[in-house]
Length: 604
Ligand SMILES: *[C@@H]1O[C@H](CO)[C@@H](O)[C@H](O)[C@H]1NC(C)=O
Ligand SMILES: *[C@@H]1O[C@H](CO)[C@@H](O)[C@H](O)[C@H]1NC(C)=O
Ligand SMILES: *[C@@H]1O[C@H](CO)[C@@H](O)[C@H](O)[C@H]1NC(C)=O
Ligand SMILES: *[C@@H]1O[C@H](CO)[C@@H](O)[C@H](O)[C@H]1NC(C)=O
Image (cartoon, rainbow, N blue to C red; front, side):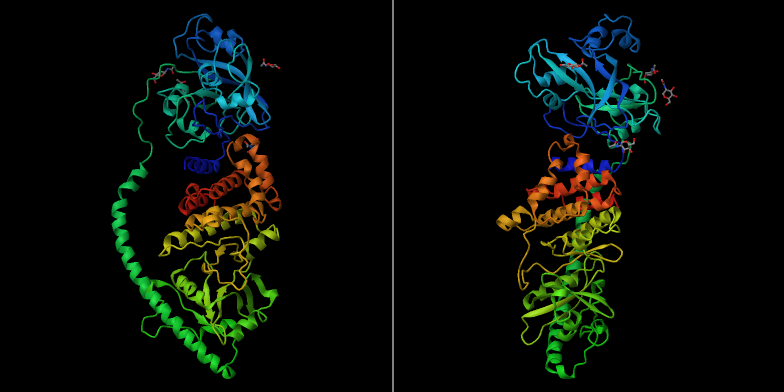
């Protein structure tokens, strides 16, 4: 859960643009996070910058501190208003150390060689000697051959630092000073120390407003001039809230909301029962009507498929029209078998979209026809009587087969751009990044509706890129065919699906979340997710320590080549991270549709 929250926060942050993150883990942590080392951009090879170091028992003079950082003591002395390099400084006195920060491939770093002179461990080198300016995990990476007790060894110590994007960027930032927090610090105090606005610090480090920061972690302080530390800033007062506390408000109103929900729920349930009764009535009536028309088929004139509206449009026998009830625009047409045959060229293979689903065309428009067992139709019709959503393919009508009722046909709208899978396959330039993120949002909205607004909650269980269709203006619609396995040749694919569903048939909405993650990966990469293992390989860089492996390069490798470079890398990373969290093996670690929607809503 923590990992998930972290990923989600990161994801939200990425939509902003600063490349630097705040790593909230302590210096002795063995895990890499964004911000464990500051990644560098080839646009800037090296720069002059500063780090903050605090005098301590072992390094108590400017001279000893300068030696630790391999700097010239006179230079360090000149910027710290200390009279002599041998003057013993008060413990905790902050000293600015001028350093050269350079970009070595992936990361900015200050190269320091440190000779271990006494028995000490790597975490102690990281947290005590260098006061958190380098993380333990970085020391392991840079000194892979070193184990056990370190005496007399020379360690490569790449200290954390960063350079501004260019000499004079828009904000005029000239230096990014690496500052290690200690107990009692916060960003407000820090901003006073350096006379810089607290918002700039938050922005530079991808921190949310009034963040919690921890001792032995570092931030970058963006400065327009050479740093001067005001050493007489008192400890901050208790933090004054900068924004209205929205979270508590939400919490306290929850109980009254629940009461309201109960009464609204009761009304809704009542309406739904009524609607279901009406739908059942219609269903039976249609069935009778079908039988009649079937018996007198010789007299029945074949009308074009979409002209059902006048002769066979259903309406309840009572004075209550289903449209008036609960406001659903719901009325089903009945179709004859001839109409179905004409539309699908006698159910020919050429009109088949996927297993047991046909595309039918008539002069008036395109429809999608799902062949299913008679027993299954009731469930689907009931379900669709409760569904009215722009991101779910609408049910127009039904045809109850012929002779025996074994096979029935449900007639749905057909979104004109065809299935998502086909759109990805044709690698059309029109299906650009913006449209893809919008499609992701649409799918999430549709699923959210099924999970939260349909009563009882409906789990789709068969979300994949073949059952999602795109309209002519690239909006996505999910097909809902019910989840009874009723197709004639049940070749449900071996596609990548939630492991708990496969192994113990565990059904929960988390199965849909998993499938949604897979669809996200398809949207990003354009590839078909038939084989989970191939996919898992290509996204392994998103796992633990993903930041270390030049993740942007691997991400570019993952993204559909036909998008060319016409997409936002940050958004792609955000989607990929989101998708990655959806396909967690443990269903409890997957986000909910609520979480997902919140993230996607920020991208479209
Ligand atoms: C690298 O720098 C270029 C321009 O200097 C900028 O457009 C790009 O966003 C930077 N990339 C990262 C990852 O910081
Ligand atoms: C650190 O030591 C390595 C050899 O162990 C040497 O190549 C490198 O130049 C040294 N770096 C500094 C900054 O002294
Ligand atoms: C702090 O910065 C402001 C401008 O941002 C400047 O006017 C002011 O003189 C600075 N204060 C000190 C004490 O340097
Ligand atoms: C340092 O901060 C204190 C308290 O905020 C302030 O009174 C003082 O003028 C500052 N000193 C300098 C040199 O900016």
